[in-house]
Amino acid sequence: MARTVIEVNDLVTRFGDRLVHDHISLHIEEGEIYGFLGPSGCGKSTLLREIIFLEPIQSGSIRILESDVCGYGHDDVQELRKRWGVLFQSNALFTSLTVAENIALPLKEHTRFPAPLIDEIVAFKLDIVGLRQRDGFLYPSEISGGMQKKAALARALAFDPVLLFLDEPTSGLDPISARDFDALIVKLRDMMNLTIVMVTHDLASIENTLDRMAIIDERKIVAEGTLDEVKQANSPFVRTFFAGEAK
Amino acid sequence: MGAELKIEKRQGGQTVVYCSGAWEALHLDAVVPALDALSRCGRGRSVEFDLSETTRFDSVAATALLRVQRSLEECGGTVTFTHDDGKKASVLQMVRRYGHPGSRFDVKEPGIFEQAGRTAVHMLEESRGVLDFIGHTFVALWQSLLGKKPWRFKETLYQIDESAIKALWIIGLTMFLVGIVVAYQSAIQLRTYGANIFIVDMMGISILRELAPMLTAIIVAGRSGSAFAAQIGVMKLTEEIDAMRTMGFDPYAYLVLPRMVALIVMMPILIFFADMFGMLGGMLVAKAELGISSTLFLERFASVVHIKHFVAGVVKGPFFAVIIAGIGIYRGLGVKNDTESIGINTTRSVVESIFTVIICDALFSIVFTNLGF
Image (cartoon, rainbow over all chains, first blue to last red; front, side):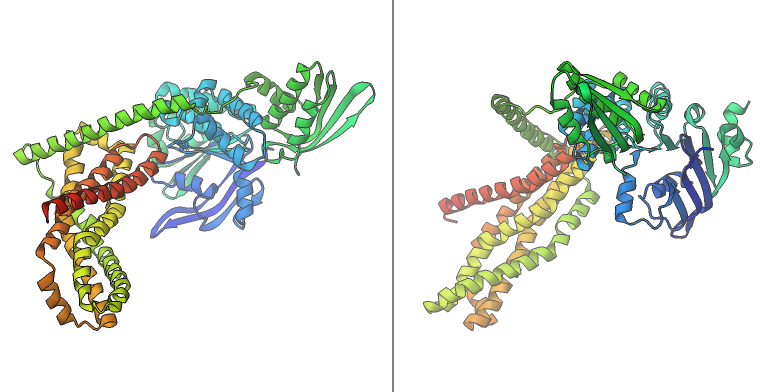
C-alpha cells in the first residue's frame, strides 16, 4: 500500500463566528494527484493554506510526510518548506526578477551551488515545464499568462520537491493552455515522482488529472475518493456540479 | 542524512565514487565541491559513480553528476554510472533529455556607451512625459471650468481631509518645536547684546517668510506626495486606471485635479497654521529665557512685523502645492509593470518634490527681494 503523505484529522477552523471547517479529515497518498473541490467560499483554499503553514491550525491535527506538524517550531517549518513547491493562483512571480532569476532564487538562497550549476538546473526546469531557453531572460510582465503559470510552476519545482501544491492552476487560462497544463501536471508527476495537491473548479481538469478528490460542502467533507465514487455522493453541490456530464 | 561520497582509486587509473545518503537538492551542498574537484583533475581518467547506496536521487543531483561527466569526457575521460534500480536511471535519462548543458542566464550589464545612450533617451522621454502631463492637466482643468466635466467635489473634500486636515497635528507640533529651537538658539546671542526684544522681529520674519512655508511643504511632500505616488502607482499596476479610461472617466479629471485642488486650497491654510504654532513656540521661549511677557511679545509683533511677511509666506503655498501634487501624481502614473517601480517612483516623488520646493523657494526669495517685498 502506498505511503500516506498528508493526513488531516478533525480539523476545525472558524473565522470569528463563521465555522469554516467542522471536523474534517482526509488523507493523501504518495504519488497521487489529489483535488479539493467545492463551491466557492467553502474553505478549500483555507485548507490548502493551513497545510502549507500560511494559516495557523486552530484545532485538530495535520501530519505531513509522516510527522505531526502541529508542534513544529520555526526551524522544522523552514526545513519542511523546502520539501514542497507552491503554485499560487496569481502566480506570484517576483516582477523585478527575470524568469530565470525567479527559478534560481530558492537555489541561490538555500544552497551554495556554483552559478553554472544553478543555471543548468534552471535550464532543465524551464525545459520540463515547456518553456524555451530564451524565455528565461524575460521579465514576468513580458510573457503571456500561460507562460507565467509555467514559469511559476518551474519555480515551485526548483528544489525537486516531494510535494507540489497548486491553487486553481488552470484558472485564467484559455481552454487549450489549460488542457496543455493538465497534461504537463500529469507528466511531471510521473517523471519526478511528485505528490500533487490542488484546488480546482475546472471540470475537464478534474477528469484529466485527479486520481482522488475531496468535496468540501457545508463545512464538512461530503465525499472523498475517485471521480466515480464521488459522483455517487448525496450532496446538492455534487449533483449540480456534475449534472452537465451525467446525462 | 545528507549526501556523502567516498572516492576509491583502483589500479589502472580507474576511480570509483561510492555515493550514499540523500542525493537531493537540499542536501547536496556537502558534495558539490568534491564533484567540482573530480571534474577538474586529470585527463583520460575513467570514473565510475556507484549510486546503489543513495536513498534519494533527484534531478538536481543528476544535473550535478552529468556536469562532471561532461567535463571529464571533454578531456578524453569516461564516466559510467551504476545503480540498483530503474528509478535512478530514469532520473539520469530525464536530465539528459531535458537538460541544456552550458546554459547561462546572466543578465548582461550594459556598457558605458549603451548606458549613456539609454540615459539620454530616457531624459528625452521624461521631458516629453512632463509636458504631456502638464498639458493633460490643463485640458482637464479647462474642461472642468467650462462645465464639460463635472467637478469631483466629494473626492476633493476627501483629499482635503486626508492630506491637510489630518496633517494639522504633525505640522503644528513640528513648527512648535522648530519655533522653540530657533528662539532658544537666538535668545543666547541676543542676550549678549542686550537686544532681547528683537527676538520678536527675528522670529516673526524668519518663521512667517521662510520656515513655516518650507517645513509645511516638506511635511506635506513626505505625507501626501508619497501617498499620491504609491496609490496611483498601485492603481496603474492593478489596471484600475485603464478600467477608468474604458468607462470614459478621464483619470486627469478624476485623480489629478481633486488632489491638486485640495492641496492648492489647503497649503496656505496649513502655512498659516504653521505660522501660529511656530510663533507660539518662540513666545514661550521669549518669556522663559528673555523675560518678555506674552503681551509685550504680541504688541511688538503687531507693530514691527509687517503684514507683507505673512503674505510672502502664504503666497508660496499654492505654488508648493502644485509642485508636490504634480510630482507625486506624475511619478505615480510613471509606475511600470513591476512592484519595484512603485518603490522607486514613491521615493523619487518625495525627493524630487522637496528639491523642487527648495528651488522654487529660492526663486521666490530673488523675486521678492527685487520687488522690494
